[in-house]
Length: 84
Image 1 (tube, rainbow, N blue to C red):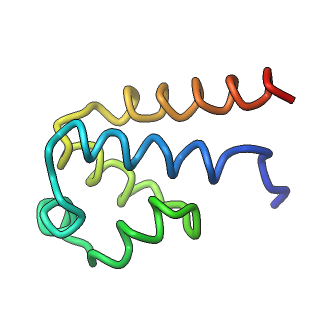
Image 2: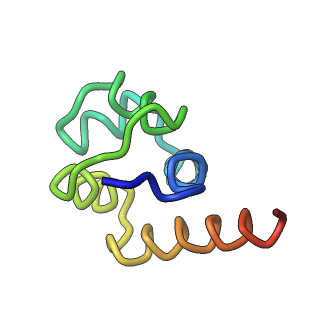
């Protein structure tokens, strides 16, 4: 599948901002979402993107609707595209 320009850094930034706003450490978020802390770190550094199940679990662990988290990612992508 073709890589979507700006998706990885936009998602990384959105995940980290949402986690920090929720006042959770990476370990706390991982525990709530039932994943490894290293997975949260990979998401926040733009190394990986989550699958759908993980995306929903992470959003809910931060007390966000998955659609809200996706909206934040889309906004960041649009901002990146405007800057180019």
